[in-house]
Image 1 (tube, rainbow, N blue to C red):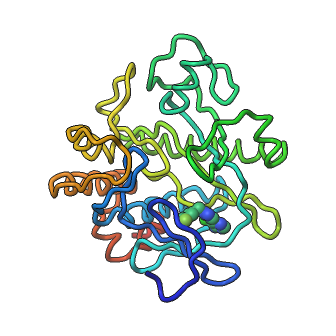
Image 2: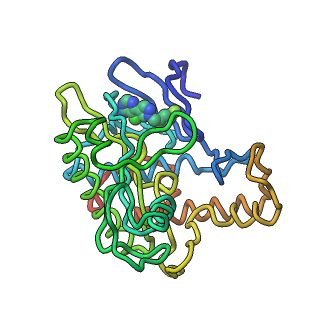
Length: 292
Ligand code: Q0Z
């Protein structure tokens, strides 16, 4: 826990605190959720991996869209951020057909009101990435909405701006990841506005918790794909016959170790930085390659 900062919000696996009226502290825990349930066993260093990855992407996408990151704390799991007026929209970009995008397509041939080509299979790559915004549900699951509903929430002009920013961020990161053996099937961005009304990328970005990461060497469209990070946890849970309602099961040591190794592998592949170097000095992810 940080000093004695006022607590603002709790996510399933993260906490948000006030530093002062302009700044927040976002703290990523080592908790893990599967099938929407937080498990009683933690994955050591998961919070550091997600914080470091997110900071890496913020540093490398500054020219595409400004962001809320002010700095990393020495613990590697906490980031200081600008406090923004958040937009009431989950900005999802999909490059592949999975999850609720696949479900909508099977039922209606569309997702978020957009007609998709016929004959697509589960996990197929889309002809081009699509922006499929959803509402922030206070309880239950986010709900996909069409462009008209999204425009009613933020205005047509702002919607156009966030769509272009989200697509540019996805294209950049998916191409970077593809060169390192990771498919970013889809991802969710959150944006806010600063005092001047400028659009600012916020929250956590392009991590395995905010995205679907698939190992490229195991990609076989026509069914669901293994998760880069959580597959050991899911496979173990499936062996138990657990009904996927709380409380979730404890994880055995080998599942914890294997899962930790996958998070660290994702970090090292995507950043090109040894995770131990990040633990020693978190700011290493913020420096351009040449300056290390
Ligand atoms: C993010 C969240 C939680 C982590 C509010 N820069 C910002 N300015 C204003 N608000 C936020 C941010 Cl990131 C903000 N969330 C989501 C909840 C832990 C993130 F409990 N909520």
